[in-house]
Image (tube, rainbow, N blue to C red; front, side):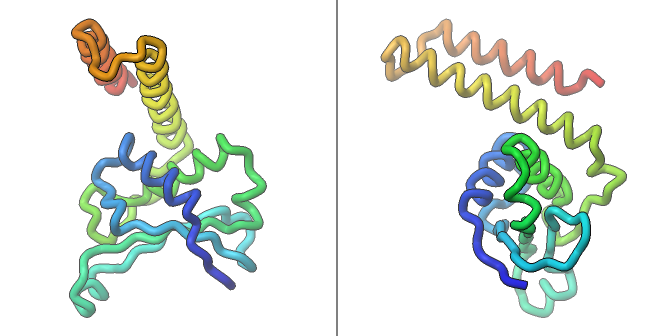
Length: 161
């Protein structure tokens, strides 16, 4: 097996973490592509440095996301996005070296996070487009109010199950 840093996936994981998983310390998260895996059916893996090794070495938790190139790179962009979300969901809010299991990291929750991410990025793209159209450097009062209303709508829709 061979591992290489994956800066393209790293950037996407950092962007997703900022929007969906603010508990993830992106300075302690690294993404890699692996080549030559003999595992069957695995597209990606989440690795962590456990508590005992953290104590032994004297460092805080570190997470590494491994994306098996032969499988991951063949997927379309939307499926890749879901795989990245899936792996990030394994990282618990404590960011302590443990894992969230597949009772939580399931298709339903992955799709919920995917839809939330897409909605939030569309809102951001819409804001950028409005700024470009008006060529204004500072947001107007109406824009700020619209943003607050949008945040409130997103907050309320987050809790609809």
